[in-house]
Structure formats: structure tokens, C-alpha cells
Amino acid sequence: MKFLPIENITYQTKLKEEDIIHRLLKNTEPKKMFRFGSGSTKPYEGEIDEKTFSIRRIIRSKNSFLPQIKGQIEKEYYSTIICVKMRLRLSVIIFLCFWCGCVGFICMLIIFMILTKSLESSEFPVGAIIPFGMLLFAYGLTMVSFKTESNKSKKYLKELFEADIIEE
Image (cartoon, rainbow, N blue to C red; front, side, top):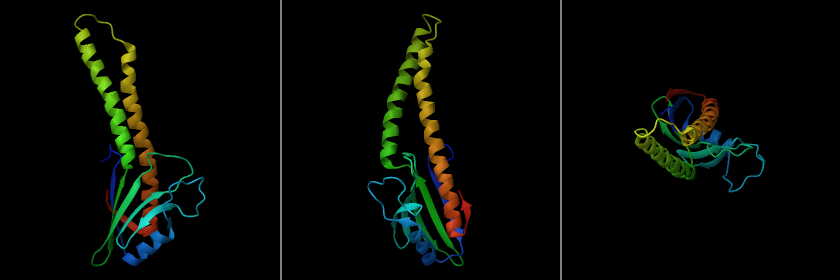
């Protein structure tokens, strides 16, 4: 999943389930609909249950590509496993699919027009590159923004859980 804005990470720690939940509660505040400025002393917001959590980082700026972090805590014999999934919000995924679908359709039309016109003339319309650049820009912006934030959260959660990453 290196080329998609999705992260699946498995942490292994010697902490007990209760300690993990306690640490999460200590570093997470309830989710707010609107947040003005940072105004928070805690780094994350979200919901925490007995064995699951759904959180995201609190940041001062606006980043639509901020990962939604969902985790599940599982007890093993001598350790605890925390399975974490980081994804984009559903509304962002829907918008990106719609926007990239529209631009992708235009790219396909351009390719079709170039292939049919190439038999008639050898002139290449330079403006035809713009939609392809738009797709590359959208992909690059999405990946850089998402991966930057997911790396921060991966590192923070590793320290918070006193854990090793056993699978990425």
C-alpha cells in the first residue's frame, strides 16, 4: 500500500490492555464538530472504547488529507497487539474519486483525439498535457500530505504504546 493513502500497522507491546486504553484516554479528547485554533493540550481527538479506538491528530492548520486512525487492541500470551489502520476520511475519498474521474475522463478524450488526429496531422497540442499534470498534482498532494501526517502518528503511537512495529 505504499502508493495509496492507506497504512496498516501492527504494534506489539508488553503493556496491558488497560494501560494502553489509559494512555490513549490521557492523550485524546472528545471529538468536536468545529475547532478554532489548536485550543487543546492533547494531541489527538476521537473515541476510545474497551478494545477499539478511532482518533485523529489535532493540528492548527487545515489538512483534508489528515489520516483517520482506527485501532483494535488484542491480548496475546505475553504481549498485546495493536492493529492500526490509517485512511483518508470518506468524504475526501469521494471527492477525490469524483474529481480524478472527471479529469481522467478528459485525459481519455484527449488521448482519443490525439490518436485520431495523429493520422491526419503531426501537430501536438501542448495544452493537452494540462489534465495529465492535474492528475499527477492531485496524486502527489494527496500522498505527501497523507504520508507526512501518518508518519508523525506512527512515531507518536510507537512511543505512546512503548511498542515495536512488527508489520507495516
